[in-house]
Length: 309
Image 1 (spheres, rainbow, N blue to C red):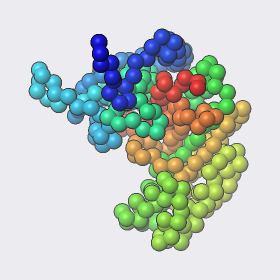
Image 2: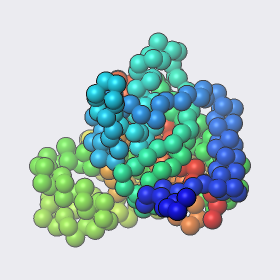
Image 3: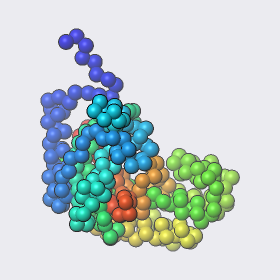
Image 4: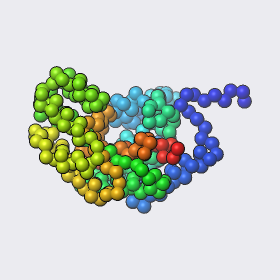
């Protein structure tokens, strides 16, 4: 065979690499099952209207194909989390809550990104559907920590943020769409020079929040003492209460907070988080979210990112 060139972002996983990925996948799934998560396997391809669940980011990331049988457009999944949401409020809607599901499978993306140069990856993760107690996040973090320690990651750190904080500030100070977007971009770029046209109180709050980025043990008391308006205060109070439990239960682990972190997919609520290696490789991400009126929490990561370089 003369031409063995693969499309950009696709590769053969061979010999030692394939064996390593297989072992990592099995270690993660075995630990998830020990935490009573049940394994599910959604299909690689679905009709696009059921796959995306109104997620515009996934629509832009996914390959489309025409089903020759139904003559309908189908999409190849670029993320499995939305499929778990579909299953939980569909086939498993009558199952007892909280419903604990785990998964692993191939995903395809139209474009690569900073997280992975590949357009084909193996995603794995776990979700808890129908929760009533926010402190269930302690179980999720415990599971992630056990996985990383089993994979011999030592100097990883956990970064937590408030996905609805900007929305709360916008509501408190009645910002219009232009001002809201200005605030989003400013937080995203960590550049407060962009918001010098906004209300002086918004600028002061933004500067204070910027100063709170870092070690949770140092910033939490500082964040709790600041006098916020009602909507922002509610977000911060919930956040600081949960973080205080996290730092108490995971004293030996590095816990950081980033109040300016922007949830670009606008999917999470209450708390979102990312776990990084010492080389700042993103290992896992997750957080709280809602599906069909049910509060949920979960996390996911790419097997390729869990291979120690």
